[in-house]
Amino acid sequence: MSFQQSLVLGIMQGISEFIPISSSGHLVVLRAVMGIGEIPLLYDVILHIATLIVVIVFFRERIGRMLGALLRWTRRTHRAEDAVDLKLSGLVILGTIATVVIALGIRPLNLHNHPRVVSAAFLVTAALLIASHFARGQVGYDGIGRRHALITGIVQGFAVIPGISRSGSTITAALYSGVSREKAGEFSFLLSIPAIIGATVLEMRHLGDLGSVVGPPAMIAGFFASLVFGFLSLSLLVRLIRGGKLWIFSIYLVPLGIWGLFAL
Image (tube, rainbow, N blue to C red; front, side, top):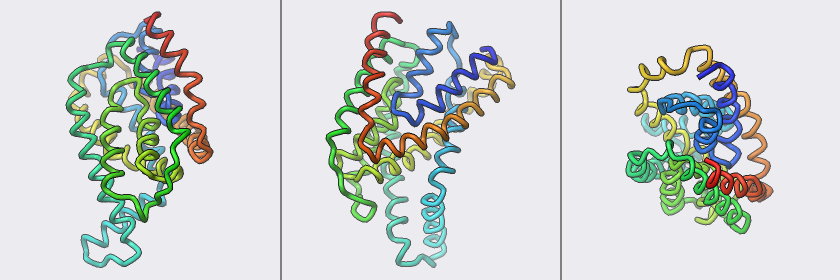
């Protein structure tokens, strides 16, 4: 992989990780278009680490409160106002368990090497985004419970299918489970943190293979491109979620999916 190719992939990862058009799906399509052969999944994970940093920085206040509440709970010094953050931490763990169960069943299918499957999944994402426009969730963190976490976590597990947008599908799932628009977006990205960390740990065994395919300069370029464009796209996404306008991206995904079914 060349420096320029890695840069393009990094930019696409940063944009599409948050904008609900599926980062993994677009990486598959771009590789097919640019004629790039199979690359260890760890490269995708490295790009995801960049966007993970974006999530942590963007939601640092909420994450800080959750970690502080957990720390006080372990020391048995927690306060009454920690209740919501402690419950939220538990729900993230519950949702993550649901994600792992589903994802482990799908990962062996190795769908990253099937661009037409990815194209069909783009159409599924488009349908989910259109459906999100009609959701009317009202529940905030005070009322969110296990049902909301399980539904969102299960859908996140299916989002390991390239072409299924993780952000788009989980936000839609949270909305239809009853969570308000503002909190659905935040909960979706809080739930992504352990998922990305887990994927990174699992793929570390491929570190040696990665170095033989992607050189350090290209890897660094992809990482920082993903980081910069991730900040920009997440800022945009938060505004679109509040306005109920995720459906806009279906206008792009439908023709892309149809094109991919016939051209790839």
